[in-house]
Length: 191
Ligand SMILES: Cc1cc2nc3c(=O)[nH]c(=O)nc-3n(C[C@H](O)[C@H](O)[C@H](O)COP(=O)(O)OP(=O)(O)OC[C@H]3O[C@@H](n4cnc5c(N)ncnc54)[C@H](O)[C@@H]3O)c2cc1C
Ligand code: SF4
Image (cartoon, rainbow, N blue to C red):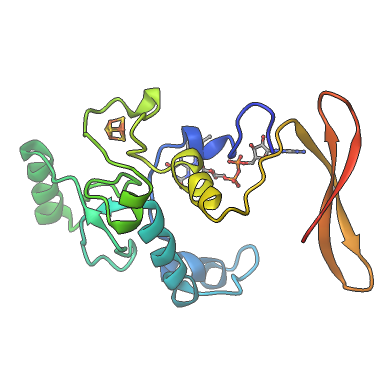
């Protein structure tokens, strides 16, 4: 666990854009002959996208575009009249799509997000951090959810030193951590 930002640095400050990869993305290395072919395809990951979207809350408008798959959206932000005009012109003249972004904002919280106590007031101050849990972060969602199980132990000031590997089992079974204050080395094993 990070000593300064429990819950991970990035989900606290991320932009909240939540686009799904499409079949085109997963097959691109194979089709264009670069890198390594993905061992999975869109259909393998789609149920997991849905699972995460329903938990974190992603708003968006279904557009039925193959290269930008729709998700399990909460109501999305409608385009304003200027944006709508740009969208119409782009399509009429160039057959290009212009879509409202898909964001991890609980525009209309579902049952899970209500239980997490989250709501969004659309006041556009997200960059200062949201006191209402309106956008997804580990602090608003996953950590409180884990705490509800009664099985969460938060151990701050723990710098991971290395992974403990169990040879006979052939898998990782824990981590070695250094206490940032005392410098004491401790093995934390999976229970
Ligand atoms: C400014 C910004 C905007 C972004 N916007 C978007 C976006 O709009 N859409 C999108 O999909 N993605 C976005 N991302 C990326 C996304 O936020 C991250 O990919 C994701 O949150 C990473 O999550 P994580 O849990 O893997 O890592 P992190 O959230 O980084 O968590 C890793 C944690 O491990 C801790 N740690 C590291 N080493 C040790 C150690 N030795 N011992 C103990 N703890 C350690 C770190 O301090 C940290 O707290 C953005 C990222 C940034 C920075
Ligand atoms: S800061 Fe305001 S607009 Fe942003 S997520 Fe929170 S309530 Fe919603």
